[in-house]
Length: 147
Image (tube, rainbow, N blue to C red; front, side, top):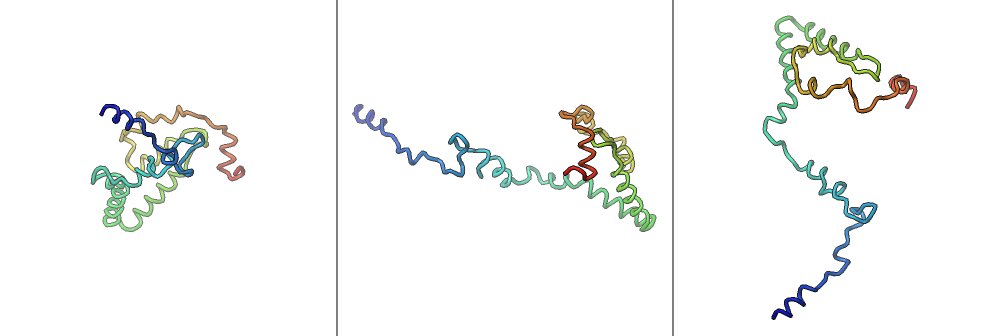
């Protein structure tokens, strides 16, 4: 009885059943799990929000602006929210050269975020980027000279 169980263990599967389709194999014939539909992108597309408030938190700034503009329109008239939107639009366009960090102090002041400290102020220091570009090339790209 022991001899038959040893013989059953030596049974091998045919090589054709172990093959991976060509569209899922990589350069070396190994299955590409990150590029296939079961990879990270496939899993991410099937996930739903982790918490019911997650979708609301993503739109909190936009919703707060709408409430502020509605209140401003009711109190001061139609010109007040239009002027504030115009000022924000102009302040958002003022920047330094593309190779230098722009702090957008005027825009933060108009939005009321100049006294608010968040994650990006502490851990995302833009004055120490990982890579620094050539200022001439970056300016030519912004001007539309370099495509």
